[in-house]
Length: 360
Image (cartoon, rainbow, N blue to C red; front, side, top):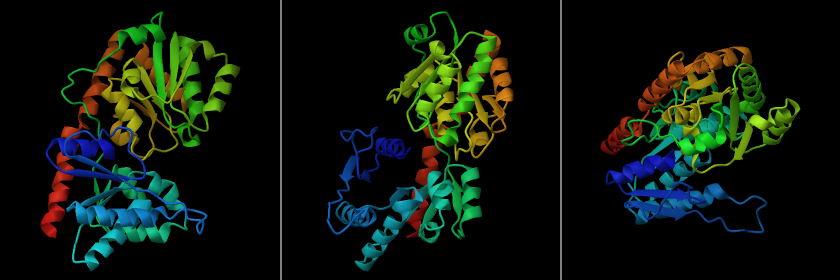
């Protein structure tokens, strides 16, 4: 998200500087108005764990001074907001004031943040930010519930880059290869952690497959992938299973799917669901966290309680029951995704940047 946001801002003429320990995968540094600065952490025998936050703060100071930055926009509360605060104080001591925005994405609040040992730092870093954004109303409320936040949190959702695309592109050759006999294709994309409830994905697929010919694509990798393979073997599903691992061109793969499954225990936003909808794929999901803000029940797909695989399978079969119903849901999923196109989200960030600059 940060990479695509920066690229879109650069395309509008803003000078964008990416500061990170590693070049983002989706960043092409040959693009106009884009600059990349690597944070290099030296290996000192004194430290068991290298002080990345301190090195990052120093790098922020260096880039801010020599590139005449106007604003720092950091993603995730830790370690980036606290590093930005330290950099801001150092710069201020030299007569330079640069405001910083912190965007909360989820795991910094819902997972790492609930470790009490981080609570004072996260609370302080959020409250010291000149502006705070969260990617969903759900995440905003979680932050307010778990931290003593006094700063105003503005909700600016995640986005997709649809560009001038009027209709999702389907690679018919790939689809025919994956489903040679016209089977329906169900897909799941994630990092295969327990929170994604991969066994639920497989159970829903199994119930759908009992009623109609279907294939399942599992895209991504993580700690639960092996168990997913074992479960599919035990259930005799391997002939209708594609485990693709990590895929760079997820848009192409998602484009051939008929249905996307996201039965997660929790999602701060549900970006995978949005990306599926942007490919014209309706979503069967849980109703937790920020997902209901993305997946509109009965329109772009269906919402169910976490773990309710029977209802998920029933809803999946309703969408897949005939070509007319499926086509309607595909169109509606794409319509829902349009609400989150970057052309609608980018001006909200620009407005926030300008507001901070006017204030200071």
